[in-house]
Image 1 (cartoon, one colour):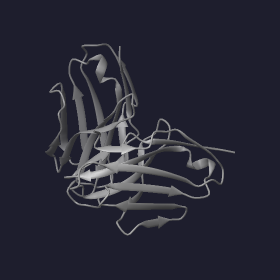
Image 2 (cartoon, chains in turn blue, purple):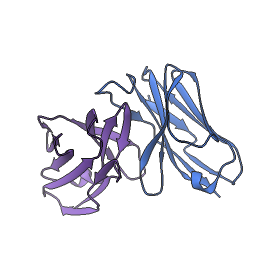
Image 3 (cartoon, chains in turn yellow, blue):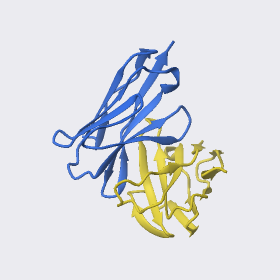
Image 4 (tube, one colour):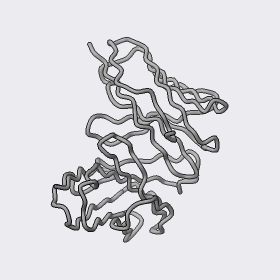
Length: 116
Length: 108
């Protein structure tokens, strides 16, 4: 009965490859997010979707493309992977759109990406 | 200047100690405030929201000073299980901005 799940948990790949990370939430939430946590532990938002519509798009290289087939799923595709993409990627979800003051975000377990 | 700044860690304290974490934020228009906890190699989890009037949840007390743009978290009677990284989080225009986190290690 995992609330927010991500696959794969670990991903080791070569520079230049294309890879995808999948996220699913069974909480019935309307809003989903992708975050990146780098080696210095800073957690930064990348994208947010509300009911399959993109509402937050931070300054992220266009090699990163999120896709939301339905409101329970938010996948992240990364083209032409670079060394600097190595990080932990967290998916999250919340009931309300981000502008609601007290919304709580629930995080997935993370995907540890290592680009060689 | 970072948008959310926290005390550098790590904090190493004995069981039973009281420990305080501080956090400052740069955007005075920030709307809401939280403390999240992140265990080693795990995802962040909400610990508590922070209100201007101050709020308490068991051994944990959070305070917010909007005038000083300052947030604090006090943990009383530390337990071994409190060992984790504590993240100060600010909602700015609908985006959660995370501090770097302060690592706490509670020793027997």
